[in-house]
Length: 473
Image (cartoon, rainbow, N blue to C red; front, top):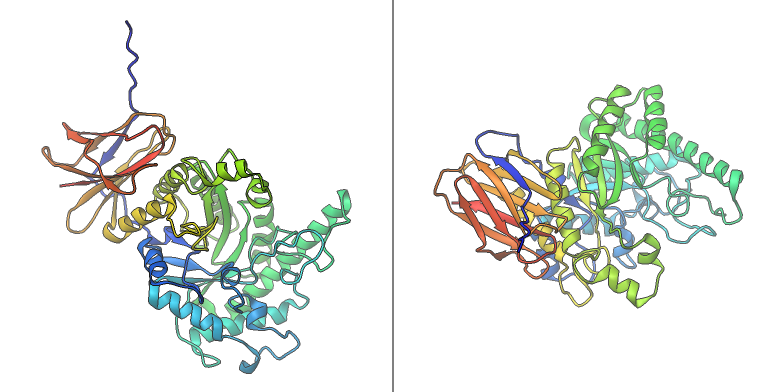
């Protein structure tokens, strides 16, 4: 009788050399406090995930009936004088950002512009192309001045990052005209979209020049937070900036993926693109990202009411926030530490629901435990050591100033019965203290971890994706 031998993929970790420092800004998010209905546990949970920055986009949507963050809430009457403090409404946003800074310790990444508007092709009210670009740029300057220079009974919070708009290629939801485009098609729709792009490039340069002229290197200004990495949008923006003689401090885009190396590839292309335009100091920021499964679509998530489809999206190991999503997230966070990307922001921004970390009954999704695990790594380990990935297995070797060594090992694919790591730089006889995150286990101690003769073997609890965190003692 033949016995089929299943051999684990072998990856390596070398703790003998230094591979740089952990970059905490790559573990950032849209999560933050809200004004209403916030519990002490909500705040503790946000803090537990250990993010560095919180991006303010869509915060007007998760703070019901509160006028926060979006520019038309802060400066509601565009016919008024933008140089007069009395024409601004800062109070609600002041309160929200103060909570964020003081009660969670998060730094602020401020999105200038508007939250998304899901009103379709027919009509829009908020996400409109501004009529007066210079006037809007002036209100943006007033906002920066309020939060960083104390203007208008403001603050001196030294908020460093200021982003111009969000997803401007979203002609149905983010950068559009009042009449919409319901009756357009073919070449007419293409001309409509091209006109919107030309307008945005001009708007971006107008705002960038205005803010840099007053605040210089006190702040970093960039954008445009594209829906995905699109050079057909980035090239015209960078070209217009170069022609205008003003350099963006960063470019930004979003990604909803299921390949844990995709952002590394995008970072390589973005670095080459910016360098080619002469913007070698331009930072690269992915400020919305999340797992997006192969077994569902955006229409499934947003418009489908079929209970079977909804169950597939929200329940089980392959769900939107389940263990496969969580292992993708951990593998991506590990890979980002080896990328050209400077900052990355996990999306959510809600605490409950589809883009949150728990459901309406306060039961935490698996994704919470993965984000908490990486937050603990960022808090407790400052150094990177060399490690490799192979197939669906991703590793991250870390250490700290006290000499402690640890290894994150993630099986995103879920096909192998165990993970094997060839380890260098750990003394013979060291013990491997292991924690596992699986479909059934939430960061539980795990005894099926053996370190012998320079080889760490981690037996998986089931056939689903899982992650191990091993501390060597």
